Structures are given as structure tokens and as C-alpha cells.
Amino acid sequence: MTVQSIEKHILKLSAQERAKLAGVLLSSLDDIADSETEALWAEESLKRHQDVLKGKATTKPAAMVFKKARSRVR
Image (cartoon, rainbow, N blue to C red):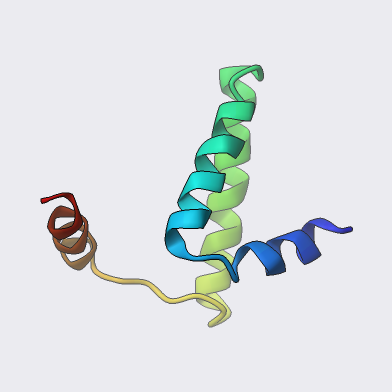
């Protein structure tokens, strides 16, 4: 199974399931050095930026995202 096929399956999960999985995956990275973590996040942010530029992903204003998050916490 490739990373791409795993990603395809993961993106079909609900937001709650993806968030839980993200937490598990992030916890599994605790053993790597901070510099390596920063490099991985930089790589991911560049990938996401490219996805936006290519029209594969969309963005939302931060105010909207925070408003929605606050409504879910209350």
C-alpha cells in the first residue's frame, strides 16, 4: 500500500476520525528530533500550498475557522 493510497482512504474518514488519527500520528513522532519535526512540517506546508495553487485544495478565512471552532467548544 502506498502513502497516496493510504491518504486517499484517510480523507474519506470523518473530520473527527481524521483528527484522532492525526493525534496518534503526531504522538508517534515524539521520538524524532525537533529539527526533523520542523523539516517535516515545512515539507507538509509546502505540499499544502502547492495543492492550493493547483486548485486541489481551498482556503477559508481564519476568522471563519476560529468562529466555527469556538462554536464547537461551547
